[in-house]
Amino acid sequence: MVNRSTRTEFLLEYPEFNTTEPLFLDDTERAIFRLSSDNRRFLGLHKPVGVIALMGNGTAEARLDCGAYTDLGTFERRLSAGTGRMFDPADVICPLLIPDGGFFQHFLDGVLPKIVQIYDILRTLRVKLLLNTYRSRSVLDMLHQLDIPEDMIVFSKVGTVRTDIQLNTCRTPPVHPMLWQRGRQLLLAGVTSPRNYVILVVRMRTRNGGRRIVNKKQVISFLKQRYPQRFQLFAGNLTFTKSRALFSHSSVVIGCHGGGMYNIHFSQSGTDVVELMPITGTQTPPAGLSHTVIWRVSGALGQRYWRIHSRSLNAKNDVQLPLDKLKAVLDLIDSSRSNNKG
Image (cartoon, rainbow, N blue to C red):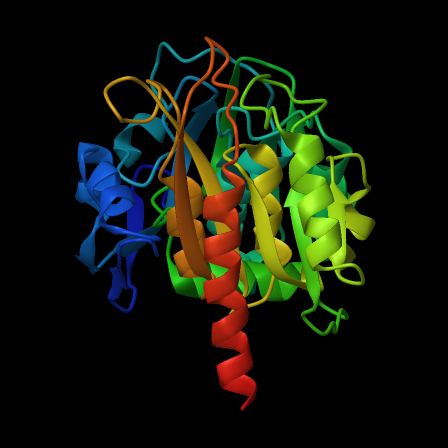
C-alpha cells in the first residue's frame, strides 16, 4: 500500500564510466573540438546516480521537466492542479512526457533510457506509461519490440493528469553504457548479424532541414568504388524493422550530424562511426545544435567515434564532406580491421 501523502525514493548507483575524446585525423581537428566548452564539459570520469520514486497524489504534465536532474517534488499534486484525466486508483502511472518524445530520435535518447531503468519492474507493478502522442510510426514499433503491451501505454491528450499512484523514473542518467547497451539488446532481440556494411546516412526528408552533404553524389561514387559489395545508402525512408536490420549489419556508419545518425543505436559494439560536424566562422558548431549527443551515445554503445569538421556553407549549415579526409579516416579504419584479423 502506498502512503498517498509521501514520496519514497530508491537511489541507483551506476558504475562509473569515462568519456574520452573522439578519434581525429590530426591535431588541427582535435583543437577545433576542444574549442567548444560543451565538448570539454562531458570529458572525463562520470559516477551517475538514478532515482526511482514511488509517490501518491501525483500530477503530470508536459511543462514539468522530466530530466535527469529534475526536482521530483514538482510531480506532487497541488491544490491548483487541474483535474485532467483520472485513472483507476489502482493504476500505477509512469509519466514520460519528454519534449518531442514522440519522434524517433528523442524517443531513443529521452524516453528509452528511462524505460530501461524500470524495465524489470514494469510488469510486476503493471505500470502504465504516460507518453506524448507518437509522431513517428517507429515509436510504436519500438514499444512493441520492447514487449510492452498496448494496455500499458497511454498517450497523453490533456494538459494536466492526476495520478493516485505514480512511479517516476525521470531522474535517469541520460547517457550511460549500461542503459544504452541494455536498450540496444532489447531492441535487437532476435537479430543476429555479421558486421559488414559501410553505410552513408544522408538527410532528405528531415524535420529540421539543413545539414545536407552538398557533394553527396561524389561521396556516393567514392564509397561505391571503394566498397562495391558493402556500400549501403540510408536516406531515412525505411521502416523500423528494415532500419534495424540494416544498421545491425554495419561495420562503418558515415553521416552529417542529424536524426538519421541515431540509427547507430542498432549498430553493434566495435562499429566505426564517422560524423561530419558543421562549424561556423568561430570554428565551433552552430548555436542550438546538440553536437555532443552522437559522440557520447557512440561511446556508451562501445563504438569507435570519429569526428570530421567542415565549414557551414549557408544558414542551413549545409556542408561539403572532404573526400581526402574521408579517405584518410577510412584508410585508418580498414588498416585497423585488417590488423585485428591478422
